[in-house]
Image (cartoon, rainbow over all chains, first blue to last red; front, side, top):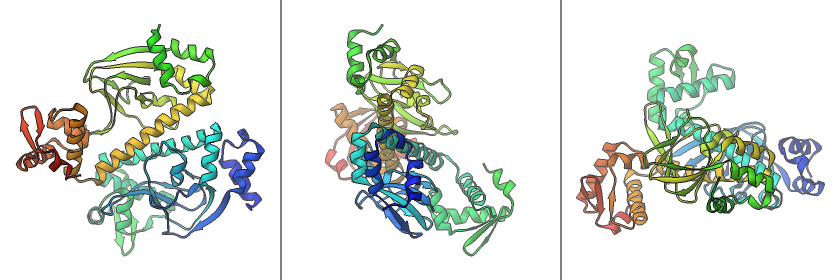
Length: 224
Length: 224
């Protein structure tokens, strides 16, 4: 049974809560579980069974697509209080593609059973509406990413990534491998390494084993 | 005033029609116009005013994004009886990106005024639901395209394009420029020309001024 805290969390996150009857509310509560994922775990992939609707209480998930040759492209990241509906793409018949989802940090979620959610979507237009809106939000995220990948110059993409990390971490030192950066911004490790080396020569960053220190933020911003 | 034919068309296309009252139906009818576009016209772009919801009676529209440097990527094409909601992205606040839309053929549409549609979306959940579903359908189309562009080998993409055209036109001869193909499948004209030349050497196609004849469909299929 869910704790009262988690029930409140459900109520606050599901904006349709006041539009559904007590019975439906109880059904959702009874079919929601708490799950913890370890950093690095793949929590969803196209060959896995439809997982359910994810409410991220704490942590970070990364949604990506993967080619047959193993090339990854990150579509977007999900942070605290985000909702993930693509982990339950079976519930929306208009979603005909499938994604991978990894935990980027130790992550705590609430997971609503996909069969129950699917049943409720078919019965209640407010719930269907909520699911569709969540999907359309992600459509906007994906379009943004795609424009970055297809149109932007690599130095700009890398600069944006580094500035984002610095502001998110509230620190000028970013602990990350060149390969991980490549996954995030869509590029081969060698290309990332080459560009980072260039940034170092330009005295924008300082490279050391496993981490990058941003030493001239203004110069980095000038690349945007 | 719309003709009876066009009113029937509205009723059949808007699956929410039976769920809305007579007054709302009349409001939609009064705020819908017929518009004709000439082949090649740009009918919508991010700097134009929100156009409205488009119902394609006959013809073909192409939806694409455009970089600052003029690079185009086709997201999807819209054919007879398709609905376009992105031409009215102002009506859905979850859509935060903008696209270009061109007429690929002489095209006849019904255009529902975006302010009226926006007002109705806010008032009626069935209409909102319909708009969201239409957007999510396009999300799926875009994801398919993106996977083609990011992951597939260029020869495969070109082969798929040629086979699609042959089956659509019901003819082995395709009248199209290499530049147009590049726009459709996301690649520079030179790359398209090089690959077509290679296909010709392989005796898959025969090139002549302004057209491509597919002479060995099986060999083309073997590239998929």
